[in-house]
Image (cartoon, rainbow over all chains, first blue to last red; front, side):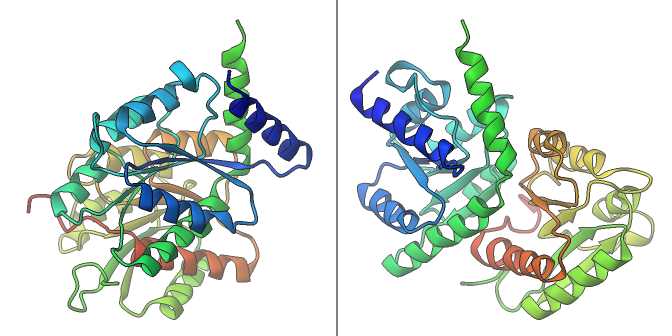
Length: 174
Length: 153
């Protein structure tokens, strides 16, 4: 357990004590510029948001399964998933999430540059919660990220988040 | 941002709702938010499935771009409708949003287990209900890329 994750845990505990549970968002994205834009768009939220970043599909699955260095990873409230990723692509990550009874409840939004009809159809076939095309323009990307924040992060059932924490606590018991 | 189909094609929305008051509110809120929506209403689960399968009087029913589904419905309830939609290769790609008064944790978890695309609690207050419909329009019918009509067809 690194110092970083301890600090993060402390931050979570503080937020819990104040009654404002931070939202945990997992962004699976290999493009640093898009990561930065998403981070900026999420930073002015009233509810504290922790944006975790996995830069490929293998890392995303390790995060979700709490493997390796992700043993302390939180249960995400929302996943933003790019399709074109190194190692395991987004469709495969999506298929793993939606076939796993523990993970399938996490709303998983496809956020990709692809507008190919085949990608859209395949994502919905694999039970993506929704499909969003990344706009090429800087401003439009920020607007999209804000609308994700406003729509999804205000409508996630708060008790589900607590349930996620509870599941996690139970899993930890030896 | 272009709407579904482009070229001024109407957006077909199927609302599965048995409360006439909620139907009316939803119709009015959508009318204010977006003129190009065709809102179809099924008042129970059996009718919803007939609409989706083009059976009986629904033989010419369009394929919806979005489904808004209440959970507590007469004859066949929303959970069963959702399960039928998400088990059907042809229908499963239609985004299906649960819109219900239930805030029960069991309903939320079960809906996501059955692959609902989104779960929304109906607010009791009139203003809040209108705002919710507006936000469904702004997000699902404006930002989201919906699948084209009929995969492969």
